[in-house]
Image (cartoon, rainbow, N blue to C red; front, side):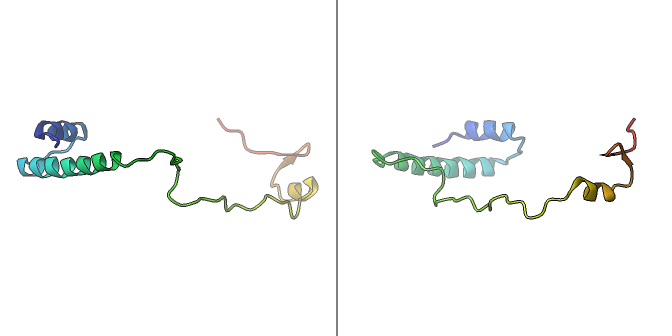
Length: 93
């Protein structure tokens, strides 16, 4: 079980103001959670591979395929300002 002082300390670190009633309640609840975790530690996991996700995760991205490639002349045709084959932009101070 988690002590009331530990709950108050964590609440202070999280900048939470708890009433005495809340401190009692959270002390019991956190204690119950830790008891459950201890039960899980008793399970024999010998030979079980760790897994990063509960279900398989697959990459759903498609291959990057060029379907149409613009020529430099086509791109520069839309440029509001061009200088020596490059986009010309306003100077930033």
